[in-house]
Image (tube, rainbow, N blue to C red; front, side, top):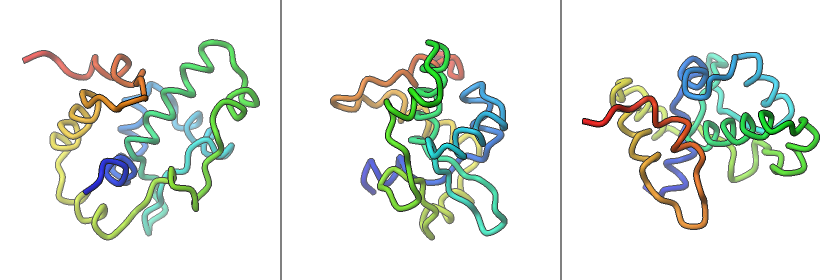
Length: 136
């Protein structure tokens, strides 16, 4: 499975994303309303977020903390639509994998993504989420 496909897989419910990003559900829904993120929806209409969504939310949070307003953020970050390549997808494969994974496995997968170096992309997510993992 390719890296981009894996990073766009719908895995995390909003509760986990709130813990990872330290954002409220209201803030996350607000950014979704402004098309800065597009989480996937289950058949029961539950939002599911990908690694890319979490990373975008952390970028948005960082810009807000620097004093950039929502219009400025829209200028810096391209809006995401359901049809764009950056949109989170729920495929049959991702749905099966999500059901099979325990929370421990999700955390392990997230840690792997955080530690992985991506050429040309400095990731602020590594520093902001590293406190979830202790050295063993």
